[in-house]
Length: 260
Ligand SMILES: [Zn+2]
Image (cartoon, rainbow, N blue to C red; front, side, top):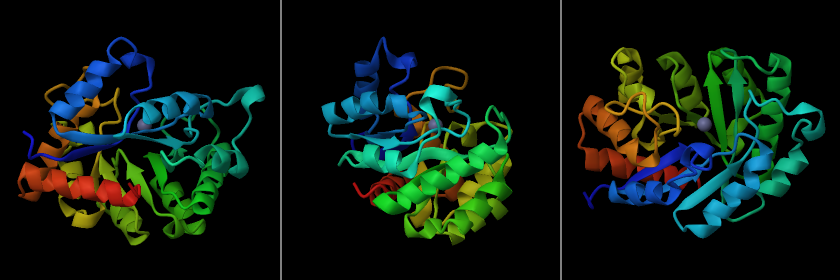
């Protein structure tokens, strides 16, 4: 077990789902060889608690951003490049996001999502940190905006990748990393596993997106960083490599991308 080195590139362990047993979650994470994780922001009000988590543990980092579906309301207002840059100016902040486009839920109007997404990419370029992209049924818009804003300057991660090979290859051409979560283990997702089998070695990452999307065999339960091992096992199998090799590769890819 100790020879496995894993990294959870995207989780939300600050959420209330973990308020009863957060310390135990970090213990189980270490027991499964998960040597680090990035706790990803979905709204700016969460940044202080992310910072506290990261400062308390030397294997936890955080990001700064506003989810495309977060309703900012009148008081909060849309994030600005300056506000994102100011909050991201901390050694434990390793990325901007999560941002992107979500046409599945559309709690926020598409034109507002697009403006917000562009703001995040501009901030990421300004602070030289990668951008974490959420793409839900919005492949064309995401790729158009990433290309248009010149994301290759800061780089980024397609998080919880759930699209087809055409979209993956466009993202790869932009130098983006492709991160897979628990849905790659779901029985019906043969097409997604086929995409995971084709991503270049140096751009492949794994994540939990916990508390959501727990991988098989824990599907339907609360997810947690320790379960990234199941995601890695599934992808190792379709790529025909050992778990140890896949784990090390994705860990090195995450650490390089986040400049850890
Ligand atoms: Zn997320």
